[in-house]
Image 1 (tube, each protein chain N blue to C red):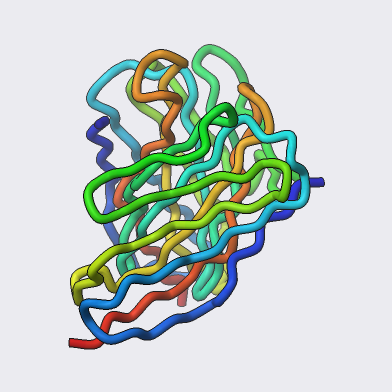
Image 2 (cartoon, rainbow over the protein chains, first blue to last red):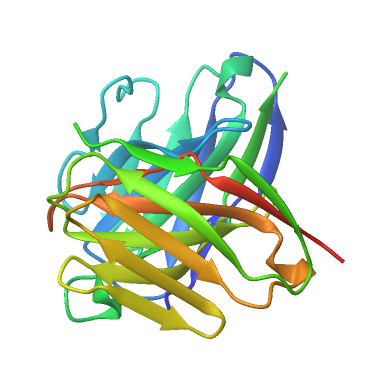
Length: 117
Length: 112
């Protein structure tokens, strides 16, 4: 299986500030995803991070609030901008390998636990 | 629009019991279905993935089945252990290039 790391693992931030979360994969992947999991809820996809092009955002999520970078095939960042307490969540990155390898299983990072005061 | 439902939301059973977790989806034209485990405050661990052409997958004490026509999947856990306590999520993918859609999860507690 893939090894995916995220930094930071957790953080406590003040409202109005921004936090950048990093996701590193131990092998090259085409598709990387960013999810949010609010307390007691299931996962919601924020965006798909495409290497070499703009990220594709889901309904309800915008680039100004959640800018994403994907500089290469093993790394991506998600920034949570101008944070409010409603942004307190676990943020997870995930990757999917192409068909034929790991059977298109999605693998998830350990998550970044964010608390906004 | 695909919707994924998991029932029950929470389940508590004594150690050693066999148990079944349920997942249902509204659009039977799926590409694959995946079961995950999530420990409190942690990321997700992939347990089993079933392609649309498959009926079941097994890994150790876990067996996942898929009935596309009825829009249902089950995760069977044999001889449950306290270490199985976690939230179990199923997720459905509609096509090869689409996102996966998660159910709300079943929070499982195994009592020693």
